[in-house]
Image (cartoon, rainbow, N blue to C red; front, side):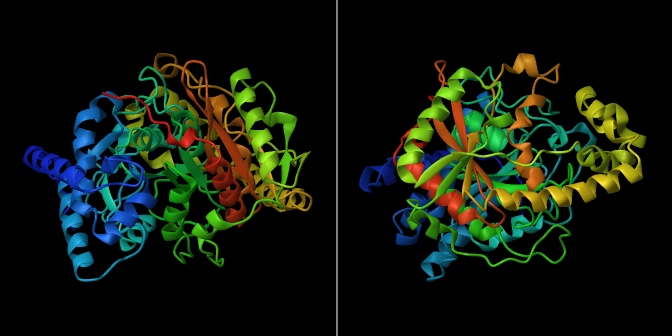
Length: 488
């Protein structure tokens, strides 16, 4: 596998001509730029032959070359690999072999997801020279489905934070306001999708790291049931809560990516055996009989008024799409020091030799787990299983839970690089990592300053179809997902 880089100037020039010619004599359903297409839209055009994998890769590389210096979403760009693979996938199509909806779709990966022979750093100086010998399982699955990897995305160092301002490769900038954070830890993924630098991306989510940047960047981010998608080959934060999930422009796109990702991995300790439905069928699923629960305690307290206003308007729309809405209580969450213990255990060998290479804020967070007793960790794991059992009772009376994704709007990068100001962002997202149940964030409005606001919909274990169905239904009667940041 050749993932190497090359001088892309000639290729970009050729692709710019190709795309311009393409635009001149073909018509899209909703756009005239390949990089503006959703995965679902691009997939149909690729399968019909109206758009080639080489053309869409060229369009994204051109856009990355022009815009990423402002955003800083990419750490590593695998241009040569993407072009070579696009040509191979184009040849497959010509021979009548279509791998499925992701065939020829350019995506990018958070830089804590291992890629064979390609720098994978977790945005840390500690791993600045780390090159894995094999792919993470999730990368192999997406490639078998036909996806094309454009590169590796910037993130909060070791996924241990919610701003993506703490990174060895300089902060990621929010495409809606370049002075503000993207959220984290999958900030590069959120920014790249929002800025149309890739059709979709992977993020990881231990306490909200897919949904936080999704909300801050105005896109869709899905964390499925714990264990549904393999985390083998991903640099861990807290393995008991770690998830990997799709980050896309629409709910339908998230369903397409999840389809390729989901499934049992016997070599992943967290993986579960479960029937995998056709997730795209959720787009046709009726929502009129769904019952919504509103957990006001905690989730709706101390929330920015602009966020509450947007979510309140979303409630009105959702009430028309479903049968009933009622206030509910979710189980109280005990103090579980699991992430602290698991993070410290992973980093202990590196602390001995490379302690000075960690950002001071990251180091302080890792060291929180240094003195946690084994007995306390074991007891916390026991309590975790009890909590995961208890959440099922909430869904005896309602089908889904609806909350604001975040309590606050994106802060300025200057305020995030030297403080713990991002820690409060996980308040509304972390509970669903503890419960281990599916949760999606999708755009539901903008602040007066033009900053995105996210709505969070969560369901019972393996309840992805209902989560996707209601999210899609809401998306179809609103236009928030159609808005894009103005970048030049």
